[in-house]
Amino acid sequence: MRILILTAFFPPQNSIASLRPYSWAKYWTLLGHQVTVLTPGKQISSTDLDFENPGYSVIEVDLPSWLRRLKHSYQGEPPQIKDSTRFFSIKNYLKRKAVAFFNTLRHSKGIFNSCRMPDFLDFWKKRAWDELSKEEPWDLVVSTSGPYTVHFLADKLKKKKLARAWIADFRDTWSNSFIYPGIFPFNLLEPYFEKKLMKNADFITTVSSPFASVLEKLHGLNKVHVIENGFDPEDLKTLDKRPIFPQDGKLRIVHTGTIYLGKRDPSPLFAAIEKIASSPSSRPLLNKLEVLFPGPYQANLSSLIEQYKVGDWVKMPGFLSRPEALRMQRDADYLLFLPWNDPNIDGVLTGKIFEYLFSKTPILSIGCEKIEASQKLILEAKAGLSLGNAANIYSFLLNILEDKKEKPLLENDSFLEKYKRNFLAKQLINLVIGEKNTI
Image 1 (cartoon, helix red, strand yellow):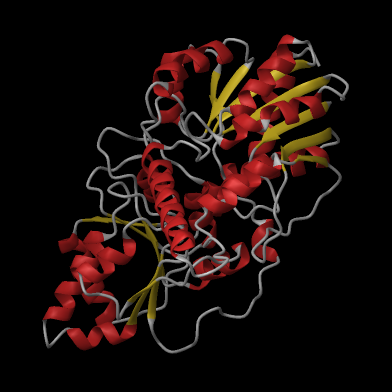
Image 2 (spheres, rainbow, N blue to C red):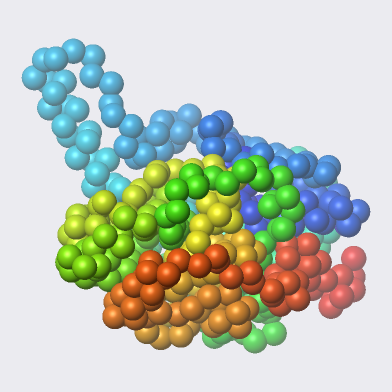
């Protein structure tokens, strides 16, 4: 089959969102299909993903130059000051204020953040279509969001009979996003656009059963299927075998991923550490503890560290390459998992939870009393504990710091088999080959 994957995220871009479409491109190519990926142009970075390409093609369509400059500005790069006059000082101040306000909107409302309308790729869509219109018809088009822009392109291909089958994939929900509320009037229009687009899709896929239930209510029972994120164990084979941490006897707890304000909350852990530090008899135990939060955007993490006075033991190493993050997961004593802390939301099964499971490092889930989908998965895999509140975490930390043991060996390979990327890629394409039987 000739297959087209439409995605905003793809290697070498170092994002967890790049891994899902990459695994499809990789394994469908190895199955003998002719795969092409269309994605926005990528900027070169020292933390780029370096993955093998077994033969798929990539079409990178650059954003307009003015849009690239705007994105450069919103990322908070300090503006260049040409001289020290009052005029330029005021201009610099106003630009910083504008950038700060824009970023606040992005991270609170989801606009221009690959989640809600409007988005940067709205201005990329015409360029992408101009490139697609040069191509021969496709047997299968798979669009994976966010952002939603890729679904508009796939819908147009289907209507113009340039795609025989279309799978619309949702890594997160769109018009009823559980993270971002969007802004008026766009958030009133988005449900209309989503329903209209999805009527033309042959299949709709998402990452968990609770998310599937949400989409079924919007788009019907027969179209929606669950294809989890999963993990590719081959990513572990190429890692540096040397331990990433010094052999200093410290117990290390590592969290890799993004902190969302009020939704993924490490406060119970910090409260437990603060309680240990408050007692002269137990405080020396913390000399054997280090908690690490690598990652780019960490919401209010630094202020929480200051609030609980745990900076001596809790560190923020900054952005890491993916191999470094995987080595940290592999070599940590425990991995910290922060479930989505909202009793009304279930089904947040990110790619990160599968990285954790395949690391074979025990997982500590904290900060959410409800046992939701991600915690169920951890418990079913016999891969860790759900500690919940600060009191449970305090007792746990005291026990392991007083008597640090070798981390247990997790024997759950058979359970994890169904979450390997190659298995999930076959499962996805079989929706078309097995059920449609027209290609």
